[in-house]
Amino acid sequence: MKFFPLVQAIRIPILVKYDTKLTSLSGTVKFNYGGVKTAMLTIGFGQVGIVDKKYERSIIQIDGKLILNGKVNLGTGSKLCVTKTGILTIGDSFINTAKATIICDNQITIGNNVLVSWDTLIMDTDWHSVMNTITNETFSCVGEISIGNNVWLACRAVVLKNSCIPDGCIVAANALVNKSFVTRQTLLAGNPAKERKQNITRKL
Image 1: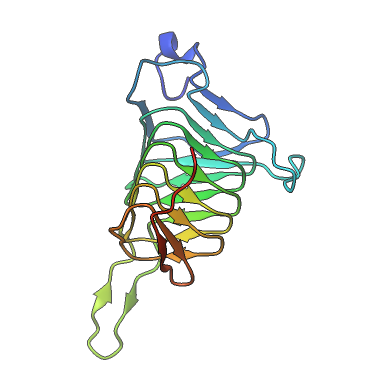
Image 2: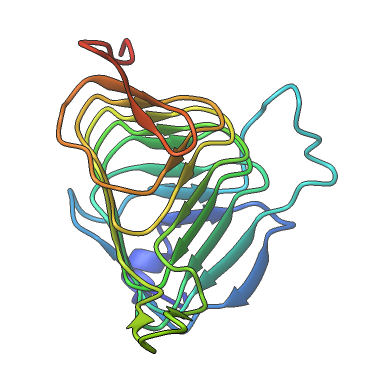
């Protein structure tokens, strides 16, 4: 009812688990495909053996623009923050198993068939600017993030501002991505992440 006219809202396009905390909903949600249907965006649902659903609740803040190009599932304990200046675009068949955190203060674009594991972080801002103490040059605390189609972010992977992950890449467990890569179907691993193996991708 907050985001859609009545004729669309009664179809329940957004399905939210009962214990999800909705901190702010002053932004907009737009579906870019096939009309409004039931459960196009689900938040807080899913079963992962290591996650206790009784104590892990989701937290949602949408003050900017959330654009969905297909069906999106944010799993148990997921956290979503889109600030007033943020534009978050997510493609079709996005699946987070549990406990992903997505923070968008500028622009994040995620492709189709992206799988995001638990305890992962996607964040396009540092929240605080830094400066060179000699020249007084100030560096921006925000950037953009682009994640291609068929990407897999393994558990505890972190993707920071000014990052680009091409189609078909795998980001290994505990990897930190903080720059742009250009080679598709590549294993990115390490802190900071580097190309470790090419011609490898998630089996769909």
